[in-house]
Image (cartoon, rainbow, N blue to C red; front, top):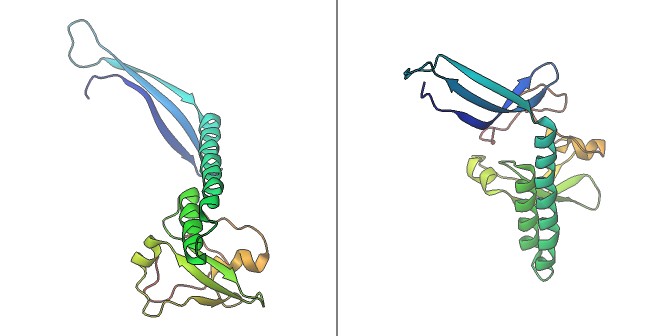
Length: 173
């Protein structure tokens, strides 16, 4: 041990039953006996800051969202490709994702045409044939929100899901 005090150390403690984190601020103050160089014991306090952390994280996301919308005005004369790349970059930043793509549905509503891939997605992708047109009915879990016509958030991709159809050889894991 260093014998140094620790102040305002933030830690997330995962609760598997609730599948959520409790966030705490930790302070630790070593207590020494006279002339001792090693602490006799440590006085520790934990303060639940979950509500503050959630509010702060939401504030940061809202600020990013406002910046995205503000910056859209800068793209009023941009090409569609420049606009799509900007939107994708903004969405990846907002969601704190490593991988992303931006696509538009065709007129039939049966196919999505991908117009932009994040740099991380392309760098990690070893598919020989990188398609840009996808049939929604045949696509995997990424297309489930389109099929359901509602938002779908998946935070643990390793978990089973009925819409998963496996990954092609060389696909980003």
